[in-house]
Length: 159
Image: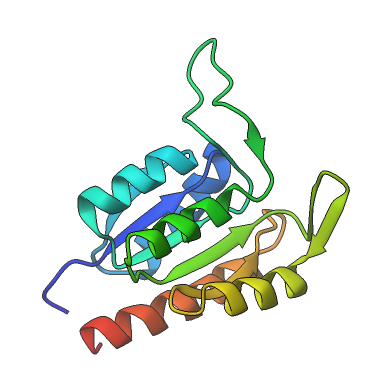
């Protein structure tokens, strides 16, 4: 693989972001990792750099959280806005959802990861590639994530 793959990690939790980044750097010989902490910064980064893969949390703030700012409304399904934007701009980039929540709840609506995967596959089949449940106490999420990462990179770069 002569070209360096670009992976955009969209995650507002710094510890989880660092864990994902660490696995990518350990498992891939070379990788350009971009980081976004909100829906807005993810969209800006996608439009600016067109990554090979997006690894995104589902629960994201609207804007980056800064000192004395909350980052806009907390959005349990903020990751869907990333999918919506990709679709609106007709951008096809594989997106892997990595979430710490086995169930996501917003406004009385709860959805488990299996159902979320089905919906995302149905609504965003061109981009959505899967979900991984992140649990920092265990390492199985790392292997699950890397299966998806290797599939995407093999399809794009052939190795």
